[in-house]
Image 1: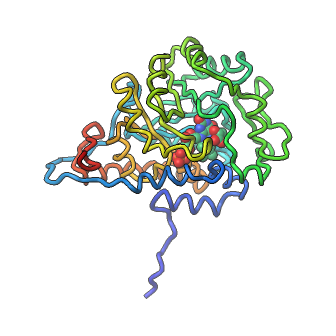
Image 2: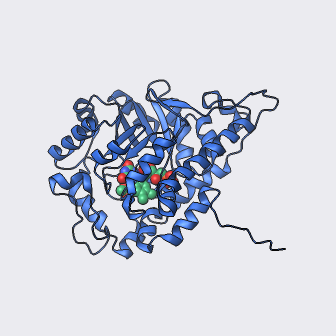
Length: 364
Ligand code: FNR
Ligand code: LAC
């Protein structure tokens, strides 16, 4: 009897990561997978979830479980959003168009990176669900203001300001690989301003681009500036401290993402699930709080909800889905997470995300 598995079809997000590694050119996989420096925070993002235990209820008598919720008043089928990740067309020729279509079919939010290989107007035209635009503030404020106006005009439903990259995290594989965009791919949102290509670099071309273009000196006044620039809700991404979270609320943000950029910026910063509870407690009721970094299982989503997040965001798993099977791959990744989340909610005795309580992580 042949006891070998009949097919190597992926059944979880780790399978997708492994398959993607075999499909992608090394330079591309290394860029997507890398964390900063010794990748301690990258590892901790995952291991911190694995250390948490779920103390489930029994005899909860639930007829059925519905993982639906809302973020910024926008209904989503599950508290799992697609995090902004750059350069999707390095993973699959359909790039951001495939990912945004899959997010829409999954009934959730797609956060589009400033550094996409597809112009925001094409992405929102292909979208069937909410698109939020993730913004890096360029030294050239006219360019930055134009990005915000275009995002509004293109129908974005929020602006996500990334604040954890005053300088670029050192991703050592990118330095060794002299990472650059493959021939024919560009930072398409910046084509109108002529800032769509990386400069020549002896190391990471992206790091050289960021050093040349991004304003590393942004402060709280720039959050004020952005909130005055747009009528869209502003989400601040990259917060890890309660005092900064409170200041985000004071300066006009409507939500924050507790994020360490997937461990790609400051190495040895806290795992995001460890940073989450103090941040969530400090802004209760003032802001919606999301968390990202290391979310790979439905049980991780329950843990994040229990510690005060309204939703999670996933980054790399979407890239792995793209690399393996384009739109269908991203759809399957999101379907796996939704099924695992529904099962985890049921097994914990909760009928919906807003029923999750902190004590599911244990007394005290
Ligand atoms: C990112 N991330 C990111 N964040 C952001 O604000 N703008 C961006 O353009 C990107 N680009 C990007 C590229 C790649 C390859 C990765 C892996 C990450 C960070 C991303 O939004 C998110 O914070 C993390 O990816 C979440 O961690 P996981 O889910 O990848 O573990
Ligand atoms: C990164 C950027 C694009 O982490 O945010 O690579």
